[in-house]
Structure formats: C-alpha cells, structure tokens
Amino acid sequence: MNLILLGPPGAGKGTQASMICNDFNLTHISTGDLLRNETKSSSDLGKEIKSIVDAGNLVSNEIILRILKNFISKNNDASGFLFDGFPRNAEQAGLLDQLMHEINFKLNAVIMLDVDKELLLNRILKRKEDEGRADDNEKVLENRLRVYFEETQPLIEVYQNENLLIKIDGEGEISQVNQRINASLRSL
Ligand code: AMP
Image 1: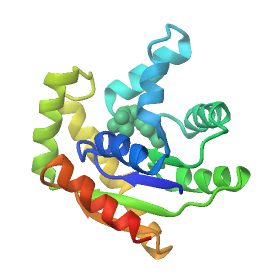
Image 2: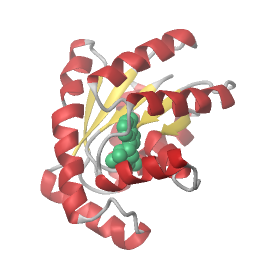
Image 3: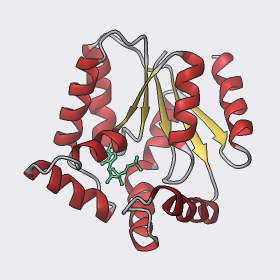
C-alpha cells in the first residue's frame, strides 16, 4: 500500500505518519525531515535549504525530487511508502505520479487531516517549546499556512476527483485520530 498524508502545518502529520507506518508496515518519507537532515551539513546546498525552510517557503521541486529519489533508492526493499509533506503543489503531484510509475507502485489513498486553523496555531506554538524548530514561530507560521492554502490545498480537489481522498477529522486525542485513520484504511 502507498499513501499520501496531506494537511496543514500542525495537523499532526508526523505523529500519525509514524503510527500508520507501524500498523501497515510502510516506509515513512517525510520531505521535511529529509530537508532538516540536509541542513545539518555545512555545504552550500545545506545552507541554501536552511534559509528557505527557516523562512517557511517551499524548496525547489528539483531539490525535492533529488532527495526523494535518493531516499527511495536506499529503501528499495520497502513494501510501500507513506509520503508525509509531499506533494505540496501541483507540479510535485505530477512528479509523484512519474516516480510511482518508475518503481511500478500504485497510489492507494490520500489521507487529508482536517484541523481548524486556530488549533493549528496553538499546536505549533506548543511544538516550538518542545522541539525548538526555527520555523515554528508565529511570523514564519503565517507564511507556511499561506503557502499551504495557496499551493497545497488545491491538491485536495485533484485527489478527490481521482477518488483517492479520505478526509479525516484531525481534532481530538492522537489515539482517536489514529483509530479514525485505521478504520478507513482497513475498509479500502
Ligand atoms: P514539514 O516538516 O513538512 O512541515 O516541512 C518543513 C519545511 O520543509 C517546509 O515549510 C518547507 O520549507 C520544506 N519542505 C518540506 N517538504 C517540502 C516539499 N515537498 N516541497 C518543498 N518544500 C518542502
């Protein structure tokens, strides 16, 4: 099974992704985590990525494709992937189609975590206290949300039209949200 986890920053994608991967034996691909890993390197590319991520903007599709292909080639024994934070715009959705075609995999569903905007803000400001991410401050968050609503949200309709979309209420306890996701995946 191959899945996309879609939702705004703070919707709980990372937390739910780990749980889904455990339950359904999928390999987690978080482009955000892969990028944060790249920023640990002091290379020019690492510095360039850091300045883009810290400002809450999207890294170029070319860089994303490169790190994705690299990750997939290192995990070629995976039975299926869960894409978390990718695709984030229409062009990336096209790149994912190509990528899946190349490795002979099929996309089974797109899980969309639905959370009220006010709650997103509270969750992220709390995460800043716990994890200290530079892009989790109020000003950058406004930009990340704007980028999400302008570039990523339109994908919801695209996947709805392809009959792949599963909309999940992302509010409430982590375990409750997880149960909702599991129930809909089991009935696929
Ligand atoms: P995330 O951990 O998914 O919230 O991503 C953190 C940051 O990494 C985003 O605000 C972007 O700057 C960058 N990023 C993550 N995934 C992508 C992507 N698919 N395309 C472009 N930029 C991305």
